[in-house]
Amino acid sequence: MGSSGSCGVTILLVFCLWGVFISLSSAARLSVSRQKLEVAKHLNRLNKSPVKTIQSPDGDTIDCVPVSKQPAFDHPFLKDHKIQTRPTFHPEGLFDDNKLSEKPKAKVHTPINQAWHANGRCPEDTIPIRRTKEEDVLRASSVRRYGRKKHRAIPKPRSAEPDLINQSGHQHAIAYVEGDKYFGAKATINVWEPKIQQPNEFSLSQLWILGGSFGQDLNSIEAGWQVSPDLYGDNNTRLFTYWTSDAYQATGCYNLLCSGFIQVNSEIAMGATITPVSGYRNSQFDISILIWKDPKEGHWWMQFGNDYVLGYWPSFLFSYLADSASMIEWGGEVVNSEPDGQHTSTQMGSGHFPEEGFGKASYFRNIQVVDSSNNLKAPKGLGVFTEQSNCYDVQTGSNGDWGHYFYYGGPGKNPNCQ
Image (cartoon, rainbow, N blue to C red; front, side, top):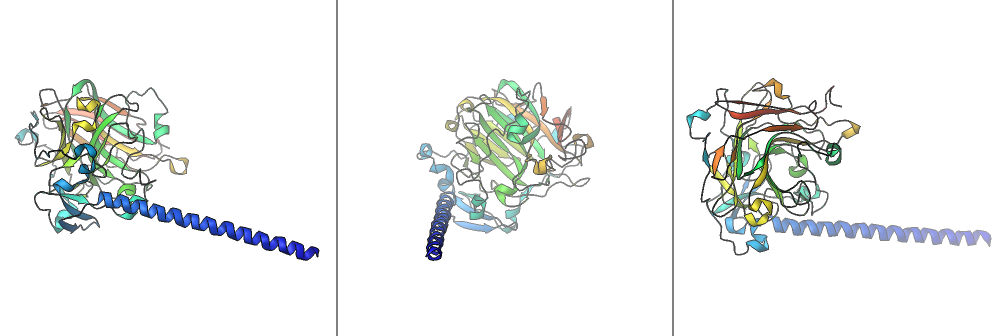
């Protein structure tokens, strides 16, 4: 009797466990299918119907989407927006690219291309959009966070918080100006392909247009080049933009991965691979980026190189930047996730320290700000900031050809940076 009783208990237990297993696995299946549905809906929102599709040699798919059908117009405030095809005003100033004075003595090659150009171009009145794939979204921590920077990813010079570096895991080597009203900024940025240690880390070189405090209300417009395996699924150097109006919390995104930036250019794709890149003791390549506020309409425009006015961020996206910027930063940023409890070996810039100079260290040259009269001017009172100069450093200089410039970057982990 006792043995059959214990047998009954055992059978009951097995049935219970089996029931728990069944309900857990069906819940898991349900959450997987729910996630798949959420991802599919998000892809549907992002990937607009193209009039033409171009396969890029680097594996990207570029969709040529009618200008009026781009993601920006999913924004409720942009439903009746009249697209500006060109800015009303363009900043004029000292190191105008058409003037001979800007030809640097050190040999720089500037014919930068995007990889997809090898296989075709988009027709007029369309814009090229890098197609988002399912695996791109699945690499993000959530569908909602896809295409967004983590909070507190902003370098704060002379920070009152010595532990800022540990809290955010981001490290910088930057030059900056503050204490005035700024209406734009420009720089020519040396292009490299830094090595990334962990897929969840990135390395970028960019300019920041900042307004507001470094609290919850920070406004930022950013543009430059980045290597980000998490965002793009590879280690290519890519052109990018970013914006936020609330310190990276709920607003903004990279490139065209949310409503915001309105692109008007059919030749350059946000997030697409830049080619060629510079080599150590070899050919050097750089890109020019200019961001400025149109004095008439108030929108923030972006230009890439001398020829490509890419589009604009409508001023209503911002609070402080609706008026002007209070700080401009130029430089490098990496994520240090401290793999194995040690500093990352993710490189910034070329992966070499500034003192190595041209052809070895990465640089920003002809850095300028746009003043209230819409003129490009040399930055006054240029400061520098880095959390750990033995990991990544920055050194400024100025001369007749390069105006204000700086070398920046480093290897990350090394005998003096553990």
